[in-house]
Amino acid sequence: MLLPTNSKSFSLLYNIILGIETSCDETGVAIYDRQYAKTHLSCRASTLQSQNDTHAQYGGVVPELASRDHVKYLQQLTQQCLDKANLRFTDIDGFAYTQGPGLAGALLTGASFTRALAYGLKKPCLGIHHMEGHLLSPMISHPDIKPPFLGLLISGGHTLLVLVKKLGQYHVLGQSIDDAIGEAFDKSAKLLGLSYPGGYPLSQLAQQGDAKAYSFSHPMTAKAGKALSPQNRFNFSFSGLKTEVRNTYQKEIIQAKNPAQEHIIKVNIAASFERVVAETLSIKIQSALDYLGNSSDSVLITRLLVAGGVAANHTIRQSLQQLSIKNRLQLFIPEPRLCTDNGEMIAYVGWLRFNHLSLKHSSLSHSHVILPRWNLHDLRPLH
Ligand code: KG4
Ligand code: ZN
Image (tube, rainbow, N blue to C red; front, side):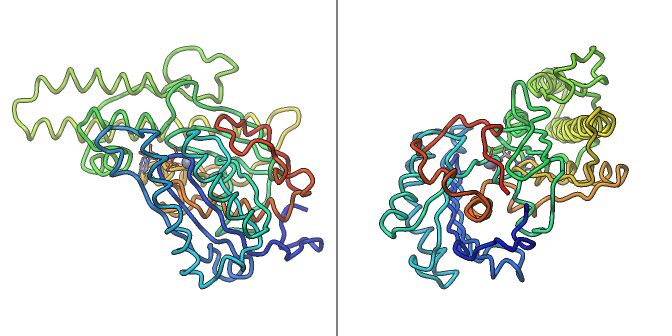
């Protein structure tokens, strides 16, 4: 049985889970309380400290500074989260933290903090896969979602198209062979003079532009004009698009006669870039749906779950909405706040794993406290 709501064997032993996320540049803490979630379709409480200001001046995440910020804020964010939930440490049934993948130093801060808390309180502690957290985050507000479904994870570090036949069992259909989608947003935004992380400011700029002004190619699709090798059918590539943006910008900007013309070039490039990225995602998903529907072990996909920071993008959300209508898919994307890194997704997947994974198989006894390079394929299925 996949979901606890229908499970007779569901035990309330692990009803309240405190989850901690520190894989990159957001310190997130949340409490998932099963009883509360049943009626509110959300976590009971959460706190978040973004490090955007710390890293903005360097144009990207500085790992050492990220670790220091996590250490600085973990304790107070955890206490604030408990206060918001009106709970004490002793009310927590189990602790969960992001075990990987991510920055080693950043992961270590969350792992040591959470494991020390759990040890001191004599409570169990589980390491959670960051990408599983993102992938299942739409289920926090839609707990009835059941596999099979297609998952699209689009973030600063990852671009993954995943077939989920069973919770905890992930078949990666495609991924980026170079820059992650968020990286392409951030690098293109930097080129246009925007602050880091550039995804949101670029999307704001794009709103003023003409999305058809520039015809950038759709990377790694038949539309790009090159024959597509079978292994790249569902893979993504964004570094070429970023270069196309740079070349176009450099060529156009020298012809601009005044700041107003410069502005028009920038907004048009931003809008065209965003359109091409959104269309490319749709082309890839469509091709995966066609493949899955027609392959020998065909799977009927009726749901699409989208998560990760880039899923906050309005144009991408609209484009995926159209794709879903065309294919009669139910589309689930978390509210923008829950698309980026957060503690909620870790607390929720922690709760799922505590209650649906035989604990003798769980990472309760895991010798590795962190796994900076952890493959999604290596997870144990939930039952
Ligand atoms: O999921 P996330 O917080 O971190 C990772 O796990 O990587 O995603 C961060 C990424 C950044 O690249 C950021 O620029 C991008 O998400 N992002 C956006 C938007 N909001 C955040 N990209 C496009 N449009 C947005 N509205
Ligand atoms: Zn993330």
